[in-house]
Image 1 (cartoon, rainbow, N blue to C red):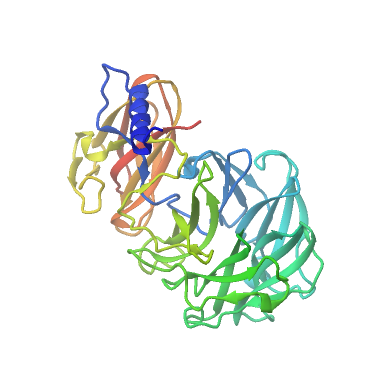
Image 2 (cartoon, one colour):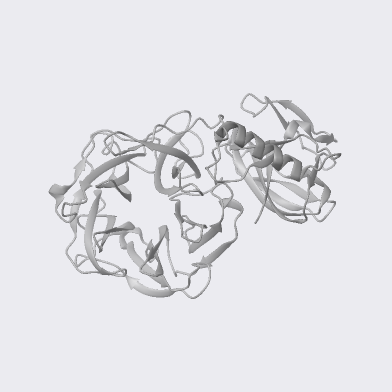
Length: 466
């Protein structure tokens, strides 16, 4: 049997030869099987679902609608094509996309402009692809109390459906508890609600109001694993907790559930407030991954970004999430994702005021920057074997005074430039900017020039869009 490491090296070598035929060279290009852990430079409450068609369907809080991204790879979700589902007003929070009994369902919270009136709603789509077909509004999904409700998710077990959400006990925002109710179908609750968790530990009650929210479930090896978010989502203390139940127990009985007395995922490695997550599998189904949001910087509040990382399992069958991966340490691509080509920023051809400078957190200790004047630029020669659409994923930073977004101008083969947006979270606090670009077979020139504000590039990766 071929050694696994040798096989992987051989595959990468073959990949390099396919992209760079013998006799051609490419500026600063290397075949890489890793990425730096940012999936989206803007967003909160990420939900990702890997369907049987091999695609990932992703959504997040966008505020005024539900937007669905469709991607064949986890790391390229930000650049994936998206579809907007109109939901009506207002404050659309934490949508989730579920596939139940041959149809798609979106569960989302909305109000009428007043948070006190937040409730859960559901839409249905019978198309095989949730980005196609028609979405039918099925109405509000509620138990008889009809109290404030957000962050609804579905538990499917033993041929039964259960709805789990975060809600108020009364009509005043004192605390958010987790409730469960039985469902007669994917859009109808047919039982009273039952409280299965309320904030009690110090790490759940350190801000007002007290919060348990964002429930997500995995059923595995005889256990129902409910991972939830705790503490204030606007604080560095936001974290993940765990309650468990046996699959043989009655999930409607509060006594079936046991809460851990410590969080299982919290701030670390310079990342703050990790929470409101979802779970998924690698493309080849051999790895488990958690996707979550964090604050963009210390005390950033609700200014958040989306990250992901692989996780393992404890001997007792519970998830071992570890701690947020160091943002300046590369991690392996999800198993089954193809390698990509990397172009280091400092290896570009500079003009005007632009030049390469030292970067303490950069991948090679250097970065491309100082693209500060209209005549400034940095060029890269990119070779691909086949013409087509490609995804460009750049590790970028923006510390422009005033805290606003910036953009560089990105052009391909001297074509019309487009805006390449970079969120503002400080210099050396690297994020991710993406674009879809059309490349011709053979040599291509990619140029970054001055736009609005300022931006720097550590490197960028190129992958085929399809």
